[in-house]
Length: 170
Image (cartoon, rainbow, N blue to C red):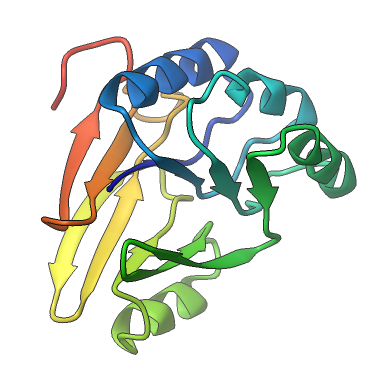
């Protein structure tokens, strides 16, 4: 199974559209969003995803109730609050934004999850630790690093590919 992973879209509609195109082109079967959509108006831009999307809230997300309503307008979308525990293809995946550093480290080091997905730092990171794969897809918006990135997790090989939507792959 291929899982698309993104975070920190920060209302950059052009980059959201590019990320959706890249994830659709890869044929992902599920998308995880680690938060910081920022404004509810960005959620309809994900409507052309060809797979379900599960998201969590980030520290810069505004009107949580309206974000929830925007998610509910799409039957394949689910906004889970600040944390989501997801089972996919036999893997236990913990999804959070990552702004609570102590919580993030506890989830990683306690080896409760096969995969921990987070955002917040705007820096792409893939670490394979004993018992836990840690994935930060970087920033989809491209505001801080100047590079928009998303990730694709292959649940069979447990490998991660970083993509630069609209550009060649990393």
